[in-house]
Image (cartoon, rainbow, N blue to C red; front, top):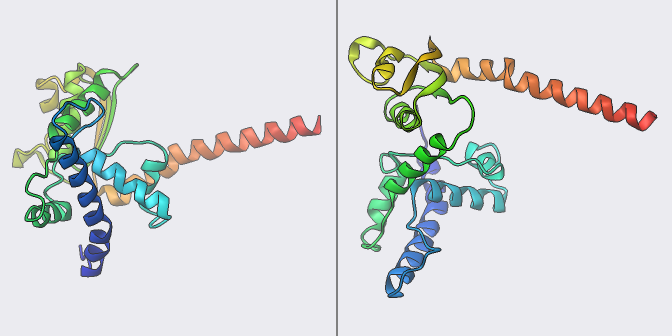
Length: 222
């Protein structure tokens, strides 16, 4: 994967002002000398959400998933947010913002609450593995385990990592129910996932849209 330096520079144009804003909010809260129940330390998901709000407000990068997740009020979690260009910016900005705090624990509680408060069967679609897979399934474990699961990975069982671990391993730690229906697809998800989406979610979406338009047309004729 090749990422041009200009991409990092463009990203910093969005991130640096946001870090300044978050830091100023933090200092105002801590210097206030009293408890503000409406204030929360910035979390990875709240930082990503506010970046998305900047994208939506400016109309920039409408092809990005953060843009559309923000428009549709879908939270994005990043448990290893410092293992990225964001982490680099947080480090360098730390020379000017020594009191900067990012509350990763609040996001852990939030994603576990989402799983525990879910109604009906609990389902997970995992693309890849590693920390992301564990983070999702650990939240599902708190809710009693998933009922349905789809895992797309190129990992192998023999390396002993969660990237390629068989679902049986997750059953043993109660992240997956023994009665759950799961499938593991050993493939590059960047190739196979778009095909799955096109033949399932998107297909049903356009079918429903055509049915709705047809009914509206018939009602207008009547």
